[in-house]
Image 1 (cartoon, one colour):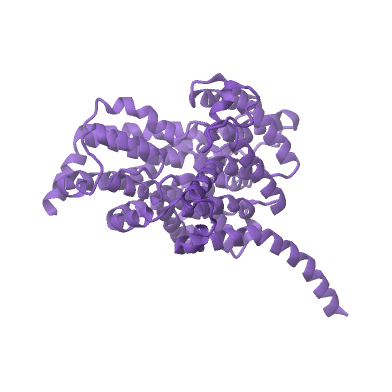
Image 2 (image 1 turned 90 degrees about the vertical axis):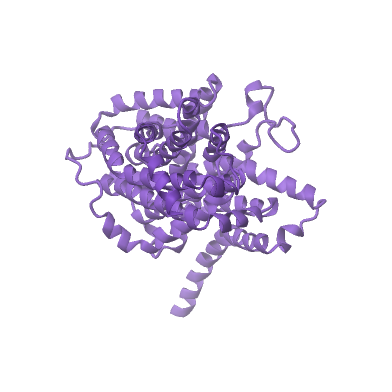
Length: 502
């Protein structure tokens, strides 16, 4: 083992690998901070470059770029309320509320610090628990995936600051939008209205950019400019993070565990990890009323979770060639191209290469801290820029990001349409994040449900008689009934108080 470890360090310290890590890290930070350009897109754009790199340098570039992009998506979310990546959407409102309170350093520092710690925790899980976690993931069938996706949808009721009923209504609208197109189990066009461009469905990125970014531009157009934030030099980005770590160590640990578990499940990824962790943070918090007003507790848990899931997503990818998320799906193709064929033999015949990947994960998350601070300080000037200067630039970035998702001008039209929808919804108290969640999870819910019914010959019993499926079903039903319980309790409690007073 020692010989393989020494060989792994030799592979990582090769000049081409170190240069690849550094350049890919900067590239990932820039791409992730641009609204609409996701970590998946950053990874996909790197694939042509990997043709000219050595196997370790090629994989290192993907690892470094994806880790940096997931973190830097927090920067525009914190400064402008526009999530740079879908994984940042879960806690964008929280981070932006901290910025409006003059605590941008706290929000950005928490995103950076706990993302790095989460990435290292995910790497440890990759090293220590890879076989066990991969075996657990293989035991999941479509029945479990249905309940897992459904439970993710129910998170909409837990993260909503407004009425849970409005949150469910927004989520159902997202599910309706996810039905558009012909990418469904029946292969039948639905809700396309004869528009050819809608046959491929509505991609989450144009919807996300529209409801978060364009709606903010519209709101800026129709409302007076707020008083500028005090002109001051940003303090230390990491100041106070050790205090947050001590105060919220339970939340950080829970976020790491949830991220690791969700990351290892094929198809889940950092997006679901962030949503579930933020919802759990609010659900189990001693101060749930502070969520949405600029409270760092949710940022700690969700920030740790999304980067932990990124590393653990490589577990099924390396062991069985099963992608944990869209990023590792791209990475698997690069592994095959470079002769590092995924499988159990990879850990025996190419042990030094596997150790090299572990070292690269740790190195990328350590490098994230100094590079992230530089990126944050460069982006913080946005806070002091006049609104008339910033908003047109944001609009152009939204259009470019939407067009880049598929080189399709129709995506730009979708961004504009969802911008109007998001503006109307927020003005009436309907949370747009719940709608985005419905769009992201809708396809997984439908496909898992229909596939399960086909396997069970139309019987619903297998949804409940499998042990893991039964546990997930109980959790999902409890989350579904939670708004009704809260409504009933709010109706009953005043009556009891009146009776006691009499």
